[in-house]
Length: 360
Ligand SMILES: Nc1ncnc2c1ncn2[C@@H]1O[C@H](COP(=O)(O)OP(=O)(O)O)[C@@H](O)[C@H]1O
Ligand SMILES: [Mg+2]
Image (cartoon, rainbow, N blue to C red):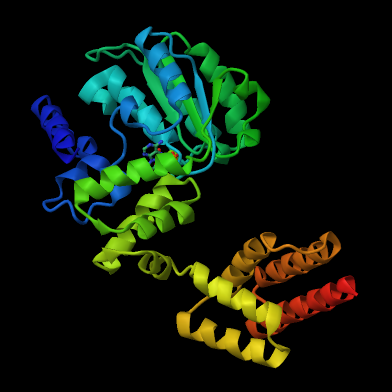
């Protein structure tokens, strides 16, 4: 993997014309660092070609076919973070233009100013100039995180897209498709990138684990997959930070490194909540919170998931979950942790009373 990206950079350097730094942006720099250890894995293992993109086979194959037939439409890729949207477009660009791809695409993301002025100036300038030298003469404008564009800019873009359709394709990427005005949506072919399912995350992680020669056990890998929730970027970041923190990547190390409460701690806390008296419960939970540095909001979230799996009458469950939601809401405003812990225990005390009453 690293080898091939190095060779590609070599190729790019061979045909290099003066403004060198721009060619060495992003992943190229990462791959060029001497030991490769400091490179973030999300960049080091970004899929280089469409074949490398895990999951979304149907979408990727469709885009691949359209690219081959030179019929690429304007694209709108949307979905949660870390699912391969940017990588897919960059792979398309690489396929279309080879190593010259940086010259043929205009890439704007949320950190660039993308008000109406930019749409009028920069995008139009790029779209209206002629290009030569690359395999395909169609240029690509990549608008990453386009849901952050102002409405005015989107309206202006609508016109620009139509005017330059002959020479330019637009690829819009966003998390929330409903923040893109309908007029733009209808000009693009929409593809939704769903969160990766766990087998794909696992496969991709396996690839990285082998390439890096990591010492990781099955439980550790499962923990990374579980905590990533289908976000591949998150999965790679968790894996890398855990690997840096401890030589053996185990379940405990993963949870510790990300600051998430361990499943067995949550089980223990739930047990206390369901069985201990108020004072004892308060004491035990405060103590484990201190010792392991847990945040109450994480505890509440995980305990909620835990009690979803416990059998109890519907009305008790509804009340309990409603109360837990209230606690989580208050915690998001930064309310006092001790008081909210008291509230958490009271909530469970109420639920226990209701359970006893239901049995009678
Ligand atoms: N489908 C995928 N297949 C392989 N790697 C992926 C995939 N999705 C995300 N990744 C990894 O996560 C990182 C971020 O992906 P990116 O395409 O930037 O996500 P998005 O743009 O959807 O937020 C990539 O560098 C890559 O390492
Ligand atoms: Mg992206």
